[in-house]
Each structure stands twice: as C-alpha cells, then as structure tokens.
Length: 348
Ligand SMILES: Cc1ncc(COP(=O)(O)O)c(C=O)c1O
Image 1: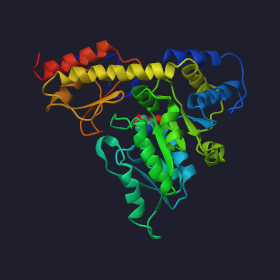
Image 2: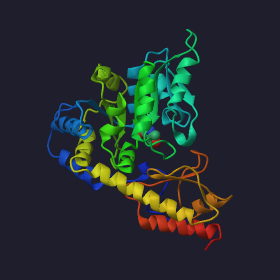
Image 3: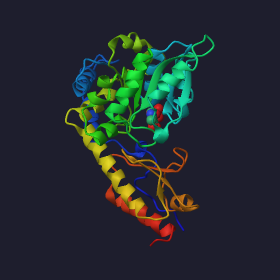
Image 4: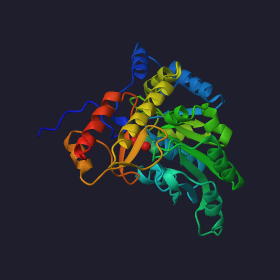
C-alpha cells in the first residue's frame, strides 16, 4: 500500500507554515532598506505592541527560537552556582541540549514531579528548604511552561501561588511561553493575568508555534533583570542583523489580534480531535486537554498503522501519542485522522 501524502500533520505546531498576517507583514517589511540590529521602525513597533498587549512597561528582545530565549533569559537570572527548578517534562530540561546550563556557565537544572506537567507551589518550599548548605546549588529561579508540555494550562491562581512561593524564598519566576498564546486563548484572560500580575519576571513568548516563520520575544517585566541582555543575545548569535524580519511578524500578529485568533482556532480543533478520539473506545485520553495538544494511549500497533497511512505525530512526550494542532489544522484533518484510527482499531 502506498503511503498517502498528508498536507498537514499532528506532529507539532512547528510543522505548520506561516500564517497570512505574519506573511503579509514580512512582505511589507521587504520594501526598501532599513537600519540593522533593531534600530528600525518595525522593531520599535513590535516592542510597543508587546507592551500594549501586556499592559506593562516591559523590556523586549526578539530572538530566533525558544531554546535561546529560555536559556539566555534563565542565564540572566542566575549565577553559575545557582539552580533552576522546573518540572521534569520541561523543555528547558528535556529538549534544549543543556543550553540553559551552557549559557549560564553551569547553573544546574533541578527537576520536580507533578501531575499533568504542572508544578505544585509547595514544591518550591520543599526544594529550597531541603538543603541550605554550601554544597547544594542554590535555587534561584522557578521555571514553568505555559501551556505545559503535556497540553495543560496553569490557571492564574495556580501561577500566583507559585509566584508567591518563589518570592517568599527569594527566587525569580521564569515562564516558557512557547504556547503562551494557546494558554491565553484557553483561559480567556488578559495576558497580564498570567504574567506580571502573578509575579512572572520574564516570559519567553513564542511566535513560531503561533504562526510565524521564526521568532520568540523575551519579555522582561522587571526591567532591571534585562541589563546587558543585548550583549547576551549578541554573544549567543541571537542578534539579528536584519531584525525587522523578526519584528514584522509580531507587528502583523499583534496589531489586529491574529495571535489570539490563531491560538483559539488551534485549541478548538484540538477540542474536536479530543471529542473524536473519545468516541473510539480503545483510545484513552491521557492528560486534560486544555490547549492545542491531545495526548492519547493507543492500542498496541495502532500508532504504527497510523504512520503507515501517512500520519505523523510524537510518541516521546507524556507517555502516549501526542497530537498537536496548529493555526491551520482543519476539521477535515481531524475527521480523516479519527476515521483512520477507528478503522485501524476495528470500530468502523
Ligand atoms: C515548551 C517548549 N518550549 C520551547 C520550545 C522552543 O524550542 P525551539 O528552540 O525549537 O524554538 C518548544 C518547541 O518545541 C517547546 O515545546
């Protein structure tokens, strides 16, 4: 049997292309010349739009990807003898090839357990209190991912509780927001309710998974922490000379709310996928679906059989198969995947 060509997959939201708003803004930016290294009009506009979005006088830096955003942000919060507390499934621990440790000259990442990819606020006290001697890498930062790697979302009060425990223990609060847009869309709250109002010091706001070609914004709500961050970016190869092409998509996405429309749409498609998978008795949903990812335990052999029909998805996160929806995922995609799975497991 030949493997069907699928136009879209459920492997990752970074499989998707560039959304029309980001694409159009890139085309606009492509007219004429402009100063390099961020001294251009679009970079200023992107930073202003981000400040407007967060209703805060934050300091903003645009970098190429999430690994650099997270690791440089974390490095700016730590000395080499410090440690970063995060969930055991956190991208900074599992998928950044040690970049947070590398860029901080050795800051140790300490992981904690917690159901569905979330940190319990009490764990902060536990991790700080269990050792205070000179031999232990001193906890300095709590890092959470919003939405989490397991597709769940922290509610504002959960974040506020973590922020309070961080502050009480003298720790900084970092948020990996690769899918921050999906979390905002899921909760229907203002971005400030998930960030500076709950004590987040720095957010790495993802643009790539939201529909841009590339780009994340490092948003410092505590401006003092951003001192010399521009040098960190440059040294790490993250200062774009044609910065306007990192900035333009943010302008295109933020100026008319496209970032939220696309995130909402991806979440809605994931909700439909969850509903379709729940109708297949042999399939078990693994984590609460709260954003744009559905995790499922498939019967033996079903994942391979789906792949043989041309579907791509991940199996290495969250103990099952991960189906991630993107800004351009469609109801037809959901129907086709669910029909194939139902056929494979014999319920059609
Ligand atoms: C939770 C999370 N953080 C950050 C990233 C960004 O990583 P990258 O360096 O590939 O842009 C990803 C991408 O998969 C992610 O899922």
